[in-house]
Length: 319
Image 1 (cartoon, rainbow, N blue to C red):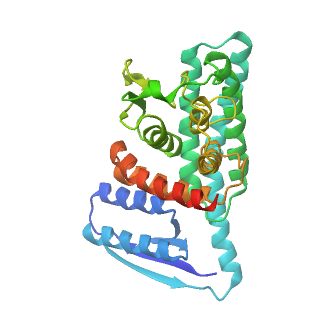
Image 2 (cartoon, rainbow, N blue to C red; image 1 turned 90 degrees about the vertical axis):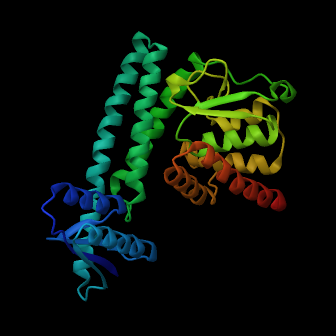
Image 3 (cartoon, rainbow, N blue to C red; image 1 turned 120 degrees about the vertical axis):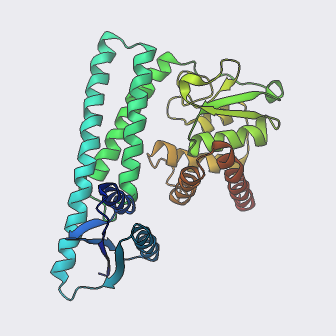
C-alpha cells in the first residue's frame, strides 16, 4: 500500500503556531507516525492536502516536505493502518458514550414525561453528536469498527426522538394549496445542509417562486415567518419522513424526478440507506463542501440551487 509522509519542523517558539499546525494535520486526517512525521494513505486529494499544509508550515517560518512511499515490508503497512483504525475508534468511542447517555436519559424521561424544551435540548445534543460523527467519518479511511455502531446508535436515538415528535408536533397528513403560500418569508436554522437546502430549493422552485428566506439560530427565528425543518412545526420531519418528503406530501407535488430526489435526500439526511441511492454520498459531499466553504446560507442556497436544478433535470431526463 502506498503512503504519504509529511516531514516538518516548526522553528518558531510560538506555541500557538505549533498548535495551529497540529490542528491542520488533524483536519485532513493525518496521524503522527514518528517525531515530526505525519502520514496519510495515498490519494491525489490527500497529496494536495499535504502540499497545502506544507505551505502553511513554511508561511509560519517552518520547513516541510512531502514524500510518497510504499513499504517493502507489508507488515509496516498493516501497522500504519492499525494506527488509523485505533485513532478513529477512540474518536467514535467518545461520541458513542455521549449517545448512549442521551438515549438512557431519553428513555427515562419518556416514562415521567418530557417537556418541549427538554426534547428540543435533546435534539440539539443529537444533532451535535451526528455532526461530530460525520466529521470523524470524513477521515475514517479504513472503516473503524465503531463507525457502524455509532451510526446505528444515532439512528436508534433519532427514531426514539421522532416518536416523541409525533406526539409533540402536528401530524403532516393534511394537504395545503400552494397558491395560498405565495410571496411568503420562510425561516429555518442557519448553517444549512442537505434537508434545509433542498427544502428551500423546493419551496422557491415549486411552491413559492417569490419566497424570501431567513437563516438564523433556532431561538432567533422570527415569529411572523413560516418555519421549516425546525422542532415542533408542520413543515419538518414527521415519522420516517425528512422535511423535503413532508413538503412533497403536504403540497401534493407529484413529480417522478422529485420523488427520486426525495429518496436521495432521505438517504443522506436520515442516514438509514432506506432507498440505497448511489447519488447520496456524492451529493452529501458537495452540499457539505458548499456550506463549509461559503459560510453564508444565502450564497449556499444560490449555488446549491444551480446544482439541484441540474440534478433535477438529469433525473427528469432519466425518468
